[in-house]
Image (cartoon, rainbow, N blue to C red; front, side, top):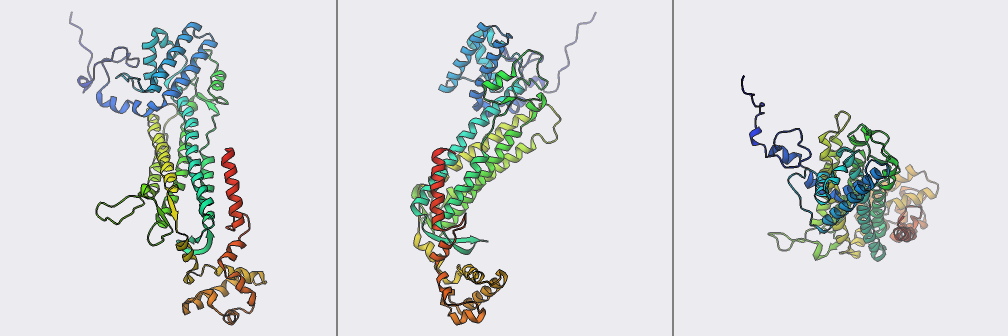
Length: 479
């Protein structure tokens, strides 16, 4: 009779770490996990921030297990008390991670068992880490939404303060980065308030379908009450399909896309500040606290914060792309690929939070040069009132295309002579189009051009005042 042969070992098995006593995930395996796999497999550094959501979901699950009779009441009471103590440790920053803590779910469960004993091992009945993480993530989206929307409002308030202080200043409106028409500074700043308002709405998260109870993806054979857990966690209803519940990351992806849209708005604001604070424009000056210097040129005042607003939107866009790519081509069901979702989502959230903070700081510490902006409007070589001439002709019954052609010829005439439109005589205007008369001089003023823009959405002073009041009321009421 020959001695039994040892089981064959795979290449590299000798490098595996020793098994961690009590590791609930290594039951069928010999020894510990290989260090190389452990590094890439461990998600606790990323998902640790979900500790509160994980405990909240676990408490709701425990109460449901008690209400349905799956667990005895005394065990549920001990579980809830233990989870409360785990929450206190996380909140106080005293929670100690262990090598067996592969993710936040296993970390919470491990500590619960340490605190209350065997009853802690009962908690995972009728659920899987698959539906657990999907629920944690959904709860996180709701909290992150509120935090980021508050930061967006802070930027809007800073803009409104500038409108109240300097909104009546005049500057050129640009198309194709060429001076086009005069506008009020308040109108330009309110444009960013409006864009951020759209972003604010986009960042709203509606918690509808609760994944908890979907198990690994096929549901569970226990008589659970999914309506109870959904209701307790603030969802409208349970997710109707267990596979979709654990394998979809659409809500996280769409939230990241909303973050990217907001980051793009802030990127444009950053680009605006870079231009306005340049020597070439000279429309604004950032304070010392939000400006940086050069390592070699002592005279430099660099708008690094504004430049980084432009640049950091790329981080968020890349995170959205990562989230879109993760499920592409995956078969139905949960796959470890989806673990990568949180790193991308959290990077997007953190980046937008930083962008909002620096944007608000710069807006709170910027001074506008009214004279420089007005000079850019009054520069006769810009011909910023050309559209007023065309509109004047239209009001005299001239078809717009005919008026446009006539004023184009007038601009060419003034440009050739090196003068502004108001420097041309009435005879010179009438030589181009006979509809001109002495009344045309009334429209060749900046104030007249601004006052005329009274249509909804225009840059007239009364419109800017009304929009300022509307937004102040809206932000005050939280609507």
